[in-house]
Image (tube, rainbow, N blue to C red; front, side, top):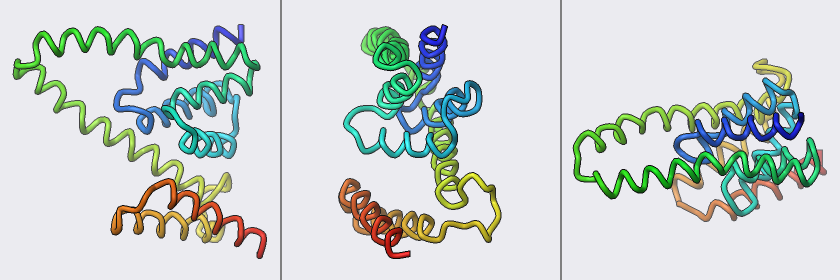
Length: 185
């Protein structure tokens, strides 16, 4: 039964995560944290961090991680297959349609209308993670603000936007700074 739940949850994520990995984060959160309570919000934040740092798409990495946490290696395989199956089918069909009808303005209009929804999904995921980093499980009380996490976010955002530094180096630097500050305090 757990295998079927994992497969179906990640089929839904794979089917409705239009726009890529970042757009899938709120859908993964809804399934894994809110609906099935397989992970806490804190564990989910760790999951997103690990999925972002490891090679591969965030949704696939998340499916593998959740599957292995819930049902071991078979769960990881089933959740990962559930996540990639819709994409495999949809991309194959869309590639055929796109190459056959790419000059039609209707197709171009449809693609243009999907962009704002994708941006909204990405912004929602980013704000959820920022709230988790800044306030933790406690909620939105200013006295509970994690100043180190919020400061690292602000500095990383500024550095990435201003100087276009390598994101891996910025993430590594933030991790080291947080580790040093955590040990010092």
